[in-house]
Length: 145
Picture 1 (cartoon, rainbow, N blue to C red):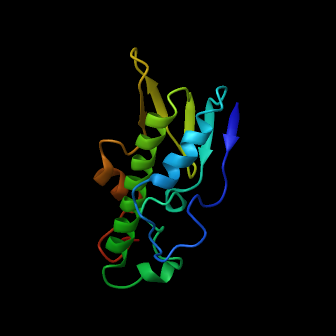
Picture 2: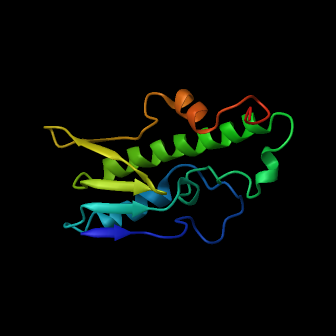
């Protein structure tokens, strides 16, 4: 069975913009989904909507213009990828029957070990700095075009 969740998984009323970062909301939802014994494929929203403490960064690209703008963009991009990895670790721990899943369009490469545990890897796993520079090349202020 394939399930796709849309929107944000954070509580509607929150006094901070960043959530509690504990992953409790995601864990609660995954515990409910664990009762779906035929669930093998899962699509989750972007990491910024999973209540893990990262809000997705600026909503306007203007924040990345000017001195240090590209470095700031890289920092936000990195935080998003790190939060995606964190969410993936929660997912594989909670739903060991999954064959595949994605978070915000990032498809995890799922490996199932003989003992039944899963590991999720992404194109940037183990090489985050290099991946960020590949995706956002150029100097600290922007691309060198």
